[in-house]
Length: 395
Ligand SMILES: *[C@@H]1O[C@H](CO)[C@@H](O)[C@H](O)[C@H]1NC(C)=O
Ligand SMILES: *[C@@H]1O[C@H](CO)[C@@H](O)[C@H](O)[C@H]1NC(C)=O
Image (cartoon, rainbow, N blue to C red; front, side, top):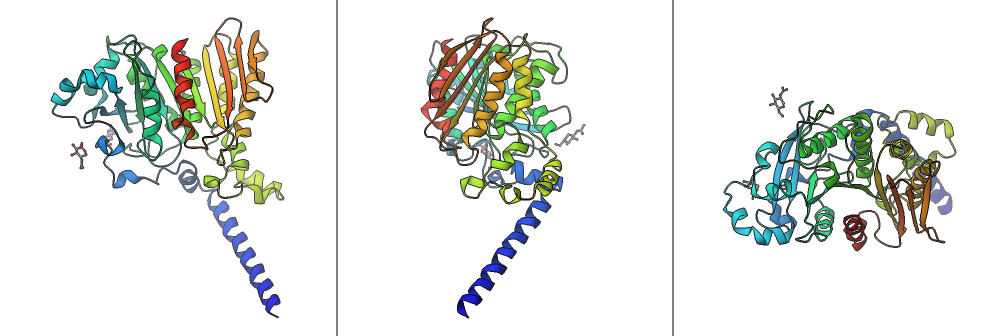
């Protein structure tokens, strides 16, 4: 009897779990709920954290200049410019003497001591960071990521960092959609390079950056956004390409990812219970409002012979949120598209942990690297991230 009772309980328990799962998946077919789940922007500690008080995130007094950029659809984006420590040391007095260090519109921020050290130095490089989903630019591992990039800086070759929040994240207004977050990136990069954000006009002011001084680095969701920005910038707007694109824990598309994505590595892949019900799975996937199709963009970029692209993809073998073979699939498609043109294999390791390819004309450089450790969020805080940036600076 006892075992009968147990079985009955187990049965209803399982049926209950199934029902909750069905309700949850069903609810996700509503765009608002779906975007809340995929962008997770409402997991937002900036409700109680002050993002302008940067010392709490490990930075020095007046090392970070908070600024805002307004998009053509009137969203206000919140961003940080972070000065490398050796420049901070050199200019400490002038930096500290600036009384008002609060957030400012970009045009005003561009006049501050810190940003002028970037904008007026043609030898400077800036890493623009595209973070993953949830929370804000200063959450959890993110400041450590910026420190890794800043660690590549030297007086001969200064490296600055710009980090920002997409619409709906942190202190940025609005709420995220695929087109919206791409527009945000275009607006930020347009401000930095002195372009109007919607056209290919160059109304370059004396102190703006060249795209060739800018390295884009994305992690997780940020790999889609930075790739989509590159595509929009170089193909749609026909602008000069960026110095490089570095992707940590990338994936082919959200559609494919949902088959393998696991929440914090703790749950089984989200849609795996639906494997036995392909029709329901197909229905759910057809309801995806944002597709995050990174592959489509990367393949178009590598297939376009005129466009320069220096692409690095790094994935950790112990990434339990986006399994490394998701990144690998993306790499394989990119490489396949690339190798239909003339190229050279520079290095292909037997275990396929490292593959490097370049087009004969030098316009495309592609690199895949699988590393043993780093998980999903820690990987851009690892020395691999520093090395990846240093390699790009050496070229
Ligand atoms: C946030 O921090 C900045 C810098 O420390 C300070 O100027 C500002 O007053 C703070 N804002 C709030 C709302 O506490
Ligand atoms: C833009 O948004 C701000 C609030 O973020 C609002 O005060 C302003 O009126 C808006 N401007 C336009 C033209 O809609």
